[in-house]
Image (cartoon, rainbow, N blue to C red; front, side, top):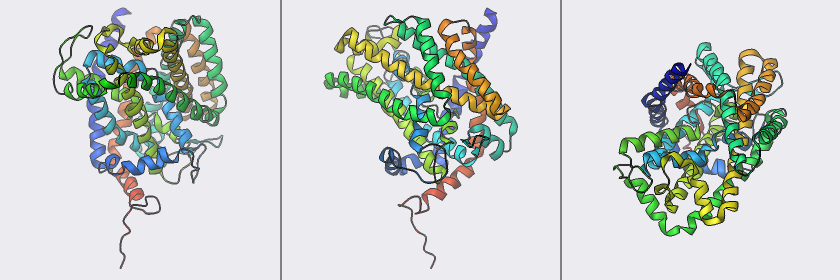
Length: 458
């Protein structure tokens, strides 16, 4: 068994090396070019339509508001890794890893925009009257490939049980640091998640639209207090990021040093993992949104990348760099850097409490949405009755993660994730022409985009 698990680990390590980076970053570059660098050309308009219209009522058909759909998707992407994953990237790749994280996010905007747009176009109503969609629908209906659609749905349905369990592990371990028994925190988390997900997408959206902004703002305020306490080092932090994106960095203190390749590897990996662009999960949440055009809702996908990677991950990076803690703590303990940075200024109780509470909230929101994603895959494959059965399985996997016993399944997480990414990326690339047509239809029509040039028919 041990040899088998080692083989699985080697396979997943290889897949998430060059093949996955080429697929996601290369696909992002391809779509960025094909869509005319829209995320740069229309950036002010995209911000106006998302950040500027958070509380506006949308027009069109749908089950939940555009902002609720975005916060539901964000609940999945903004997780504990935004706090602990970024310092790990710095520890192994150096400060230059953050530059490559930004680059990956910029091209990732085109992936998120594209998959949400396709998800909106090919969505449909289920038996309960709710709009449902995602890669399984646009691969089957749009690409005419039931095989790829089924492969995506089956892979994601399987991947989510151990994924939810690993999220639960981070909750109980974090809670145990402040004296809460693992079983108590596991049961509490299970009850909270069950109460939310059994209300369907409307209740999930109602919870996430309040929880996601609250948890993000709480963490950002705490981090910014510490960053501004070290304001004199902010220019130095950005200088480190840009300098060591293109030059090796020597060992110093607890930092072992890193080459350019390591910085690129860890930065790209962090960028891909943090915002889930290209993974195909976001369209599942967005498919329920009220909108008058697929491209309008797809702009909220760009909003997610900016919030997740551009704001939350970047804040964590600057926090770690301005405090200088990245040079003092060895890579094996990199995940503790944010907590130690908070504790250095705010004290063990307050500083540690803010980080602990933030992680708990981030993980709670992630689990809630992951259960919904899993239900939708089960519904697509086997119908609504089976989806309710899988809901029970996913909720119970929280307890399993809390008490242990399914750790061997964690070895398969990366391979299962690859199984859903490759079909989705194939769909996005093969639907490039259609994506360009939808984008042009929106931005060339004054009804949707006020800046569109009206063609002279005389």
